[in-house]
Amino acid sequence: MIGFEYYNPAKIVFGEGSENSLKDLLAQYETTSLLLVYSGEFIRTLGIYDVIVNAVKELGIRFSESGEVVPNPSIELVKKLVKKGKEDKVDFVLAVGGGSSIDTAKAIALGIPYDGDVWDFFDKGVTPEQVLNIGVIATTASSGSETSNAAILSYGEWKKGFEDDRIIPKFAIMNPKFTVNLPAYQTYVGIADVLSHLLERYFSDEKNSDTTDYLIEGAIRALLVNADRLIEDPANINARAEIQWLASVAHNNFLDAGRTADWGSHRIEHELSAQYNITHGEGMAIVFTAWTRYIAGIKPWRLALLASRVYGKDPYDYSEKERALLLSEELEKFFKKLGLKTHLSELGITDKDFEVMAERATKGGTVGHYVPLDSQKFIEILKIAI
Image (cartoon, rainbow, N blue to C red):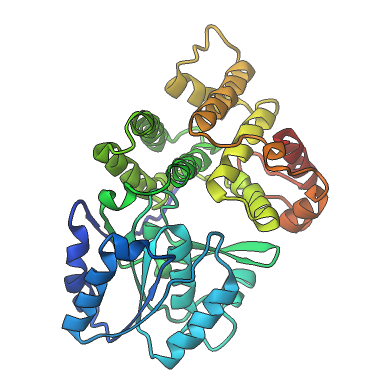
């Protein structure tokens, strides 16, 4: 186990009726001007909008809003809302929705106190001197951004991330009932996203990390079990609660303790979603199916370990490489069971942009830690993904 620091101050309010704690939470931060960011009309049909309006009215908080967030959120909307936030003297940004709304809110909270271009944080790694308070009402179970220190934004063909503990939301309200009416596709790409965060952390070259190994394996087992329950009964609120909590557990950095996560697969998918605007969770299903198949021939030990401990592939019956390949098969079967694509050709994507994407991602170096990927390895994985 390697040394580590762990910090996550996000307050979690979880369960039915948890949204009713919003007024008290906002009062704790002496909020005077709030910007609400979300996507679409669902916040009204779920009753969330009324809860927010009543809370700010009772507290005398100035209130502005934008429902323009889209999947794979772009810097253009952020810049527009940073300008508006400066004019309105916003001191609190509230996101309602999933990762796209939350990451948009995080970027706005970075940009309002900053005199320069908010893209500087993502492109140049500028360290913020000040970040506005951020709160979340989560209505999906996917990205885990409600308790993470990261945000991802797109700018043309670039998709980049920024990490800083100061963008961890002050609170995350999670009512699993808000996820019941999500389209099945959105539910299932969310599950794939949760699994991808667990896998990235599991694929570490650290050999002495028993605590987090078993925690991640248990989380994967819990996700697989509850995904099956949800497929059988989409209204199963207990399964939805388990998966929503797993989304946060998978990405609040607790499972990074004592290990170095990989993140190579995410770098590949970020290129795919930037280039083709595909849904992140489905992109991760495609990439992990290909990545595991490729890595099985190079460095199979971690993949084989997961195949044995979670999928019961006996070392006496299969070699290390065979178990690693069986893991790839099991993952693909699971993603297909969710109704997701597992090959780029199913989305009409060919190899014509692979070299450009690989060079853009690696910049002459490598991405990923378990097996560092240079541009050639990056392209080889994409070709397997076809």
